[in-house]
Image (cartoon, rainbow, N blue to C red; front, side):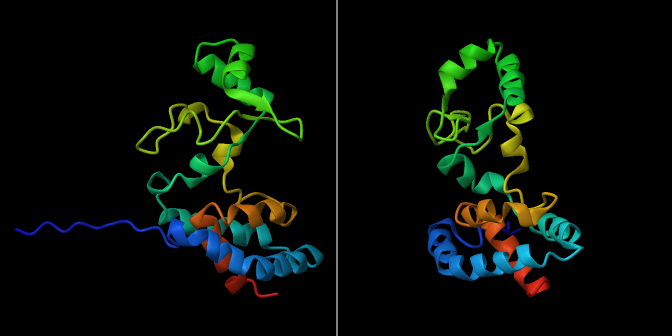
Length: 173
């Protein structure tokens, strides 16, 4: 009896993603500028469908590039929830793991994320920050308002890259 092994490959591959995103940056920026000027009524519905379809075939545990290369913002609610989970006082959590960035937001002191395990799972997954739960934000309501963030995320997340490419096919402007 032969056992077949299926190898999950990220498409696009992480080592190609930065270059692909850079090559598409001007095209994507122009597309998003047009989108902001003339936002279709069904945009959120369309983005929700594209997002859902992409994440049915994307295994984030094979990648975790977001956790390896960027850090989320931590809201006060995130800090309260996570520090309680870790059985720490919020101030202890802040001192141990966070810093205040140039925008006066709480962010991780360093990346990759402190809570990322070697198998790409998250130690605090059930209580992770809102920014992590929502990443890459491609199913967010009023998507046209976060296109600058999306331009950054396509260089980090293969799924976000694919979602934007599919969006341009389904919604030519």
